[in-house]
Length: 268
Image 1: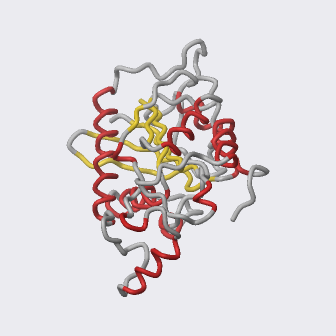
Image 2: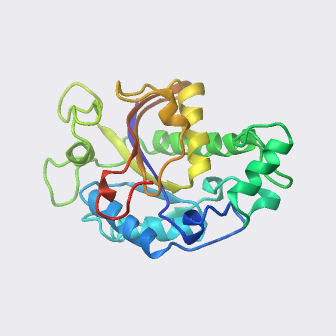
């Protein structure tokens, strides 16, 4: 039963994020100066974590963020990134490029709550969830296929393994138990996967992990934490046990972590 870590990060801030303009898929805005600083801060925070796979949405703001993270890594500077359209933000149709207030007004006029409302030409929440499910299933099958093929000790660092790297950044008892015991009775990590995506997409994906796959949460987190929009470069980590023919067992280690942003931007 292979076990892997999944680290999911929202892209850094763009000018339109700050101005509360909806980007969706049709407005491909680059990171702002603050967004580049946020990506650098996330990279510095994670620079001791060894990732075995890196995936990003194929939109500019996520591409810039993942490269800002990896270029500060001690182990992953030259890692190839796979760009996957399944990781794109929710499509908002006619309101892309327009203020968030306009989407809210349209939802109110239709007698619906804003997150549930689908503007003309946009994706439904179910369609976004389907993309998230497809991508998550793909990752699980990828790790199952590679189980046993990858050495989990890092080159040139005898005894230093994937779980040790992760536990140094997310220590047991600080943000929640990793459930990792290198050399002990628990399974070692077969892989450590980095994903950079978007706020509304990530809320849908996390909802799927919690509601459909019964992801367990640290005692410090509640369901409301999974339903909120992740802040720019917010970090969430999951430990996933896969088994062929059975649903995965998922443990959330942390959700929407942003302590790396102290001194970078004011929290809104």
